[in-house]
Image 1 (tube, rainbow, N blue to C red):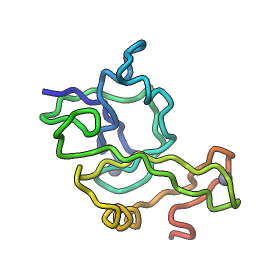
Image 2: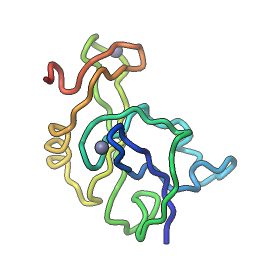
Image 3: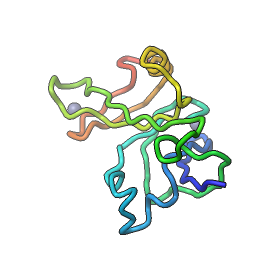
Length: 134
Ligand SMILES: [Zn+2]
Ligand SMILES: [Zn+2]
């Protein structure tokens, strides 16, 4: 049994984000993910939601999450989405949970199914994803 921390989307679905131990202060192994991305993609509805690290909930899973748990069937991908408002703006960072063996092409296809409303880049430009989405 592996304990993961899950984020909840606005519609109530849970998406795994990271191992529980990642939030333990002083845990050397997971120190690298103290600075988490601003957003995550919901596994169920593919909506891009804001990531609230303080609101994560712990649930047990059978296999865990790559790259933290070797051999897990799903993997965390940290993706950058360019700001739509200004060239050379700081990209938005998004966590997506996909099959561990997802290829680059599949990832691009997966991206085209994501939808986000009024996402704010690190410089505060609000935008929809994809651009002009209705
Ligand atoms: Zn959802
Ligand atoms: Zn921007």
